[in-house]
Length: 147
Image 1 (tube, rainbow, N blue to C red):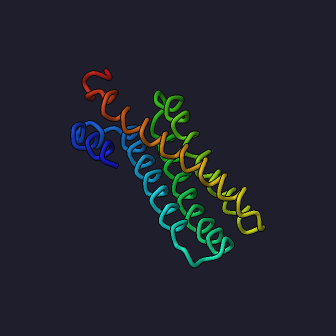
Image 2: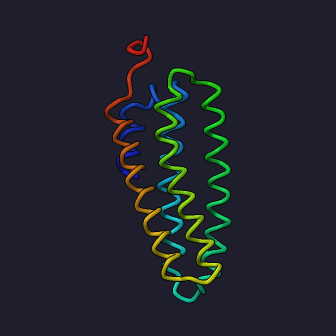
């Protein structure tokens, strides 16, 4: 989250004016928030794996719907940025779908497999968020440089 904050601070004006950069910042924030929520829920010691799975299905479902809404809005606004943006989006989607799949496995009854899938998906979300934050620090071009 610190790297994303730095990226937004350094390149605030450029990110705010460019729909693609804004959407990458939103997705990166969502990935970090997802990681925070997953780890907070996993650390509750008294809940059953099925409750954990249900909480993650609900939370991740809302996050995935929001993610898809952001992607659709950006795809309409950005023709030249779509290919690069879709690569970034795909990794976030895979991570969020992995959390969702692991949560469903928890509900069905396989605690170890479900937690392993959730852990792998959370790590993917973290790596993607770090990569996106770094890209927002290093690769944001002022609007004049894009032309």
